Image (cartoon, rainbow, N blue to C red; front, top):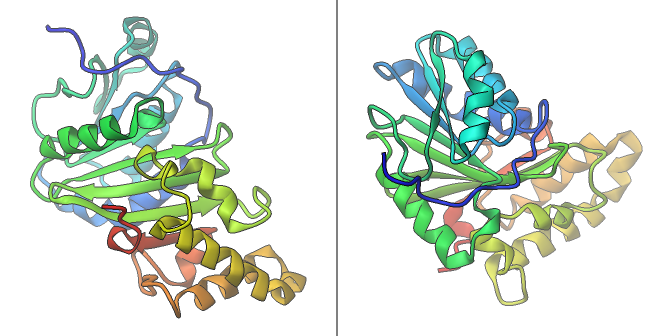
Length: 263
């Protein structure tokens, strides 16, 4: 095969680091996976350990028993370490953004992969990956803290980015804008006055401050109240699968990408 496309990441990972995103994938796209014929899921750049790929496989199999998951890594040593953990429906392969798989994937998860690239390269690889999707497929690309307690990810279709999700444990931040350090590479340098992502995080912090009295009932109640305030000024989905109290109670908030699109 030709040389894999991309660069080796640091590879840091750990148990349940991507649980918050996996939980969102199940809620937002579980029905899509169940409806597909032989759905293929790619976990791109899973890192030095197979752990998060195996966790993704287990979680998706609970809602879509026919799903097949392929973990792809650019480092041959990492692939060799993961091979003994293969089983029916779960495999590991050497590769990069070219995605060496037998058919277009219904879902690609690429976490903590693009952070090391320049912003222009991140936009480029979004285009590369979404063109590889199956019809009605989705790319989930994002960044998480090393313990997985703060994360931001973007959901893209073949047509481009569609959603952005902010997710955090309630003991992992002091104010919502603390999630700015987890923004995808396409946005992290745009968090400056005059940009929509900056305005959104500013307004989220303001709603958080206004709802401080709810903190007497717990951080979750304060978050719920702040999201409701925010929904008065921003297009926050208020119904499942992307919105509503059931999602917000998890420390999660999804927006349409168009609300913060910098281009």
